[in-house]
Length: 206
Image (cartoon, rainbow, N blue to C red; front, side, top):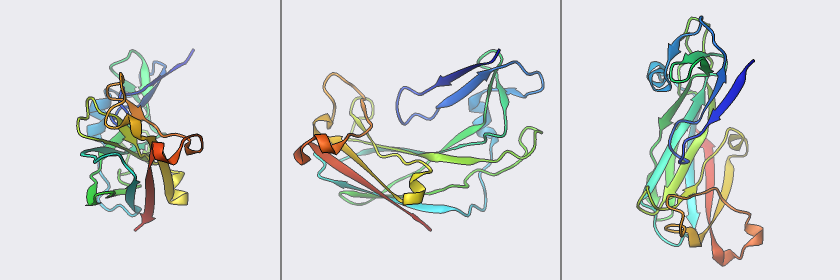
């Protein structure tokens, strides 16, 4: 019998989303997620380079905290997780990315889709790394108590090169009674324009 377990970090931008499958296998290497993340090497000659620009319109105030990282997984490889009895996991790795403030309402960053080196890390054959997306969130000042406003992208967004998020102004800087709340966005059609602000994401392949 195999039992799948999903686990998520308590905060949107804390790396650690993972999936396990309970199935003892004496032939798989035993390790931890933290140890495995250090094992994987960066690609010294990445080719697929994207520039990401986020423009914020009608925000109720400034943003002083940005947390962002690009996520990758090698779905064709497996290792046994030492922290949970007989649990196996696909290798994954998060790479922090930095945003530069261009103007008061515009931020820019860069990332590579092929940032991790494809290599035989486990003697199972070459691990093929897949880009899973870029997690991005903004907060007013205090990352522990203020609201995090999501501006993340998925591999599908690389096709359209655009994405839009809308967030309630009333959640800035904090949502009442919800310390560290994560705003995932809203359907702007059911709110007045004066009630929300917009994050427009534009991506360009370099």
